[in-house]
Image 1 (cartoon, rainbow, N blue to C red):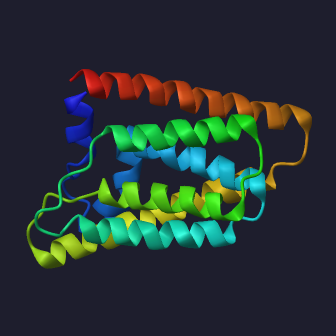
Image 2 (image 1 turned 90 degrees about the vertical axis):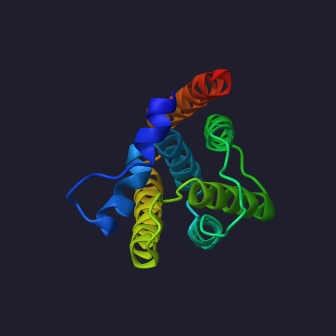
Amino acid sequence: MNFLITLAHGSIEGVGDLWNGLLHPLRSPAQILVLVGLGLFAGQRKRFKQPVLVFLFAAALGLACTRIPGVPEPRASLPCLLSALTGVLVVLRRPLPSVAENLLFAACGFVLGWDSAPDETAVWVVLKILVGVWAGLAVLLLNLANYAAMVPAKQWLKIAFRVLGSWITAISALYLALSLKH
């Protein structure tokens, strides 16, 4: 498990700092689970413009917190808990009040941003990586939400989304158990 967490926060040699930031969410299993769950949840609602803006603002705040001296690193269990929650919400397919939706998106954005701290110390390099992470989170979430919203209202696709939500919840629970064991 430590290997996965270390791999997720390393960098790919030769691709540049901005690309390392863009690819960071794809290299972290917990972040992928949060983004897929949140994207499916947003796509089921078909009114996800404001919550996505809240997500992006919170992700920027989380990224800013990564560079404040004295702020501890987030525990690996936070993204796992949020991905399990988004998976359950996809399975339930129940509308949430607007305030609760915005809080969910804000929590996910902040935790994903906070979990994306680069190991670099040079200010310019860190800035490029953080801009890349923010852009990567934005592109992934918006694409997932748009694809989920484009799905026609066929019953079997609704069931497939719910099955995918249950898989996200199960994988998150297993990942959480493994991260807490070590």
